[in-house]
Amino acid sequence: MKRILTILALLAGMCFQLGAQEDMVASLMERLQHERLTFTYSCTIDAGGLPVNSSGTVTAQGNCYKVSAQGVDIYCDGSTRWLVDTAAKEVYIEAAEGLGEFLAAPQDYLGALSDLKYSTPKSAPATEELGDFRFDCSKLDDSWVVTDLR
Image 1 (cartoon, rainbow, N blue to C red):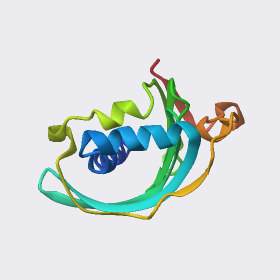
Image 2 (image 1 turned 90 degrees about the vertical axis):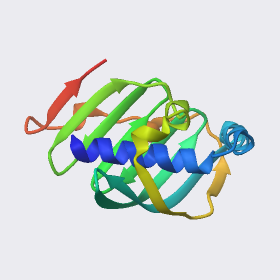
Image 3 (image 1 turned 30 degrees about the vertical axis):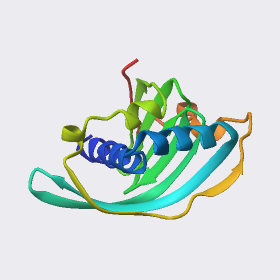
Image 4 (image 1 turned 30 degrees about the horizontal axis):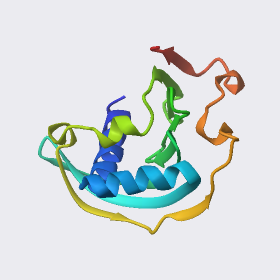
């Protein structure tokens, strides 16, 4: 769970850095209404005096996103978020507010974010098919722990 929270903080920091100015946030949100953007990132976050390096891939469209980083996948279809830790065989399901919840993250929650690098987003037209942003728990066997917090 600690690893999942760190990845959420990193995603929030990445989005906060991408949207450090209101114009950038508006521009990003406008693009996501018409495009599906995919990019990679790497960064370091100060987690209580301990530097944590992270890297991953983000795909976003509209209010939906998928993040793959450090063995954890985060799926969000705009209203539900699935945090999937494959190594621990755990899934946490939570209510979500979409991408906006990360763009509005408070700076003190993020810790000190540094060395943020991200690739130029690859763009594709937005589609109505949002299956890439949902996780199907019905395909998991009994060894998985699924915690529904909605």
